[in-house]
Amino acid sequence: MALDNETVQTIARLARIKIDQSDVDKTRASLENILDLVAQMEAVDTSGIEPMTHPFDATMRLRADEVSESDQRDRFQAIAPSTERGLYLVPKVID
Amino acid sequence: MTITTLATLAADLDSGKRSSVEITQDYLNRIKHSDHNAFISVNEELALTQAKSADEKRANGDSSPLLGVPVAQKDIFCIDGTQTTCGSKILENFVAPYTATVVGNMQSQGVISMGKTNMDEFAMGSSNETSYFGGVNNPWRSTAKGYENKNLVPGGSSGGSAAAVSALLAPAATGTDTGGSIRQPAAFCNLTGIKPSYGRCSRYGMIAFASSLDQAGPMTHTAEDAALLLNTMVGFDAKDSTSLNVPAEDFTASLNDSLEGLRIGLPKEFFGEGLDSEMATIIETAVKQFESLGATIKEVSLPNSHLALPSYYVIAPAEASSNLSRFDGVRYGFRAEEYSDLDDMYTKTRSEGFGDEVKRRIMIGAYALSSGYYDAYYSQAQKLRRLISNDFTCAFTECDVIMGPTTPSPAFEAGSRSDDPVSMYLNDIYTIPANLAGLPAGSIPAGFTSNGLPTGLHLITPYLQEAKMLNIAHKFQQTTDWHTRVAPTAIGGSQ
Image (cartoon, rainbow over all chains, first blue to last red; front, top):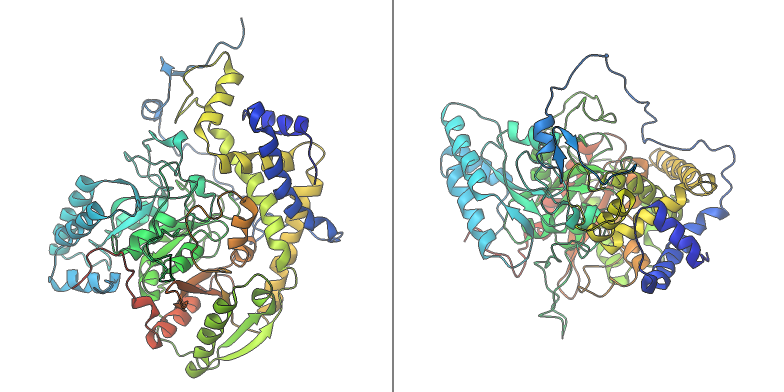
C-alpha cells in the first residue's frame, strides 16, 4: 500500500508526533510495510459478520451513581510537570 | 545448580527451614551480581520490609501459601510510591500514586515484590530491544560455532521477567500478554508462561497497550508454580470494566488429574510454512509424549488463522493510539523543555518521550481510526476477529486442547531483526490468535535445539479452562525434565 509523504505528515500530526523531514522516507517505508501486511484483510468477504469488540461479548457494566473515590488531588498533582493552586499549568491558549 | 520453585520455597517457609528475609536477601544478592539488565529498578528496602512482615505474619499463624515468597514484577504494573516506567522515557520519572489490582492481590497474599523488570516500551515488541532502558540478555546461549559468546534476545515484551526467572534472579515473575508477550519470552527462556482468559486478571493499574487484548499472567519454572502464582493474581475487580465476575477457583486442585481420554488438536495451520523444521520435529515429539499419558491426537483446522496477524496489527495499534493519547506532558510523566504553544508542547513531549516502535504503532492506529478509514480497517479487523474466534469454537468441538509451537523459531541474536518491524511481528504468529479470541493459552518447555536453545510447546484451551491447561502442563512436566534445565549464565541457585 503506497502512502505519500504528505499523508505521512498528516498521520503524524493527528498522532501529535513530529517526523523530521530527513526521516519521512524511512517512516513512510515502514508504515507501508505494515499496511501491506494489513492489506491481507481486504480479500475476505465479511458481509453479515458482527464485529467482535470483546471476547465474551460483554457489555459495559454499570454501577450505582454513588461517590466511590476520595479527593486525592494533592497526591496526583505532586507528580505533574507543572501545577499552581490545584490547577495543571499549560502554555497560554488564548491571548 | 538447580531451579528453585515457588512450591519448594513455600515448603521451606512453612517448615521454618528458611525465613522470608533470608530467601529475599539471597535473591537480591543475585540480582546485584547479574549483568542481564533484567531489572529497571530494584527496591531492596521495601522488599526486605515486606519479607520481615511476612515472617512475623507466619509466626502468628498466617498460612497463605505464598506468604513471604519474593517475585519480580513487570514494570507495567503500578505500585504505589514506586517508579513505574513501562520501559519508556516518557515515564522514566513516574512514581505511581496507586497500586495495580493484580499486585495488590498478590500483596494481600503476602507475595513480595523485589523490583520491576525490563520490557519493550509500552509492551510493544518481541525482543525487549525497544526498551528505553536497553535490551536484556537471554540467560541461554547458542552452542553453535561462532555463537557461543553472542547475546540472544529473551523475547518480549516481558523479556526482563523471563530473563529474571531463567537466570534464577527471582523464582517467578509477572508478565502481560497482548499478542504473545508472556508466552514468546517464556519459550525463548525455557519457562512456563500462562496468559489467562481475557478478564481473569484485572487491568486496573496495568499500563494499557491494547485494552481488548491485554492480560496479565505468571511466568514460572513449572506449571505447579504458575497455578500457585495465578491463584494470587486473579479475581473480580469493580475498577476494571471488563473484569470477569466468575467464582474463585484453586488452579492447583486438578494438577494431578489423569489425562486419560484427553483429545489434543493440532491445527495444520500451525505447522506450515515459516516454521523452523527442527522446531517442528521437537514439537511433534513433545506432543507424542502425551499419548503415553492416555491422550489421543488429531488434526484440526483454524482456517482463518492467517488473518490473525493482519487484524491484530490494526486492532492493537488502534487501541494503542487511543490509550497513549494520555501521554501529553500535562498530568504526569515527561514534558519537553522547550515549546512555543500547547500543541507544540504535546508534539515535542511525545516525539522526545516515545521510541520509534511506539511512534510507528501510534501512527498506524491513528491512520486506521482516521476519518474515512474506520470501516476498511478497524471494523473489518473486528469482523475477522470474530471469524478467528469462531474457528476456535468449532475446533473445540473436536478436541479439549490445541497444541503447537509457541514461536516459529528459537531465540535470535540481538540486533538481527530490529530493522524490519514486520519480520519482528512474525514472532507472534502462533500466539496472537488466542489474544484475539480471549482464550487462555500458555507455553511450556518442550525441548532443546541442536544448538542448545529452548523451545516452547503452546497450549490453548477453551474459555476459563486455565485449570485444565495447567493440569495438562503439569502432567507433561512430571514425565519430562526440560523445565528443570538451568541456563548457562544463571546466577546462584541451590547448590
